[in-house]
Every structure is written in C-alpha cells, then in structure tokens.
Length: 111
Length: 115
Image (tube, rainbow over all chains, first blue to last red; front, side, top):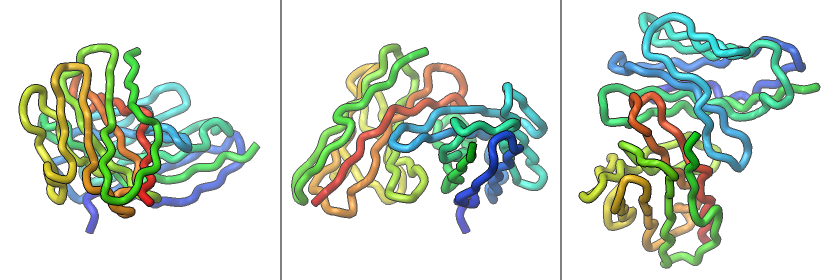
C-alpha cells in the first residue's frame, strides 16, 4: 500500500464547476499537508499548505484536512480553463523536509 | 519572490554517459532537495543536498549513481551517472527558504532522455 493515494483521473469539468480533489494517507505521523499545481512541462507550484485539521481558504481554493480519517481535499470554486493542470498532494513530518507525493490528478476545465 | 533556475532545461544523452544538472537560487535557502519524476509518475525524493557535506540519500538511491554537490547556500548540482534508458525522467530541485518545511518550492525541472 502506498503511503499516499490519489486518484490520477483524468477529471473533466465544465467551466464554473466546483472541483474536489482528494488524497488519502496511511501514515499518522504526517504533520503538514500541501497542494501543488503542475502545468505541462513546468515544475510544481505550491498552492496551499496547512498543518492542522480543518479548512484553509485562499481565494477560489480551499484546503481541507481530516487527520482522524487520514483524508485531505482541495476544492476549487468557479473553476476556470486556466485551472487545467495536474494537482499533486504532498505530506511531510518532522524537520527533514522530506515530502511524500500522491500520484497527481489531471484536471481539465472545459470552456 | 525568489527565482529557482535549473540548467539544462532538457537534454538527450547516450547510454553510458553522465549528465550534470545545476540548480541556482537567487537568495539563500536553508534546505535543498533533488527529486525525480518518471514519466506518468509522481515525484520521488532522491536526496537532501547538505551544504559542505555529503548528501543524504533516500532508500534506492546511491551516491555512485547520483553524486550531489552543494558548495554554498544558493547552488547545488546533481549528476546522473552511467546513464541508461531507465534514467529518462524529469529531475527537479526544491528549496526551503527558512520557513517551515511545508513551504517547499520547486525549480522548473530538467527533462532527460537517454537513448
């Protein structure tokens, strides 16, 4: 079993839809959780990070962490074609900086 | 915001040769890492580049195959040695600027194809 599981998709939605991206994990030691966006032929871009259960909002993006269920989500409101990318969840613990990544979900937002 | 650059951006190499990838940051960082992203796969940590000392390698990665240098707080190199087609991947450096480890930023990546 992988430490972090993420549905690779692809996920296709119409413009304006609410998108839900999810990851589950098995290691209860993970302390901080991140979401990255990766456009084709680019490096991952840090979107959001959090280190506690609950919600964190930034514009159209909301990150949600449920440590009791070992489940994290990223919600995108009013999705735009420019949101079309691969979204990677990542997790870490301690002070080593080592991150464990999910496989990434490919999202396509159709105009 | 700081700029993270990698050279080369892409390369095509013959098997048995080596490729050295550079990662340059325009401000000092506390931590630097090297990741590999194989085709259709997610990112896997190769090693932590330690300033002035040997890198810390993850399970499955060894210094002879992936020698790493980090001479200062803004620069690191990763060499992929004795190339085989299985080494065809994207190689990415990432950095932490001094905040928590949760704020880790990536370079644009180096795309390597081994023939």
